[in-house]
Amino acid sequence: MSLITLQRVPVFSGPRCLELADPSRVRVLLRAPNAKPVRRRKDKCIVEIQMSSVSDDTALKPTDANPRRHSHNHAVDKPDWTGNPERVWTLKPIRKRDRAIFRAVLDSCAA
Image (cartoon, rainbow, N blue to C red; front, side, top):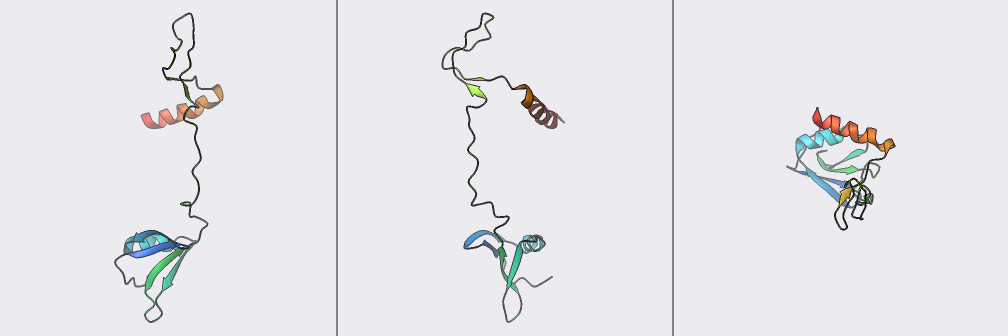
């Protein structure tokens, strides 16, 4: 493996510095197909790692989740007292097509 001159090697994606990697992390990063080491000319030591933007997800906008999708605070009147009073949050019933996903998550947590 090539020499690493610095204690911490900066890892860049374009102009953005993603991290300062220690020598063991540098070895892991160099195995990635989108990592390109930048070497110093006089002794060929790695002084920087450039990551191509293919795997850089730091600039991606996270998905906007709707926190009210699985809960509500509407008044629901039912004769058997299973309703919901006004301004009290409760969970909505899980749709049949989504129940398998929720069950799989609960089973993996219980294991």
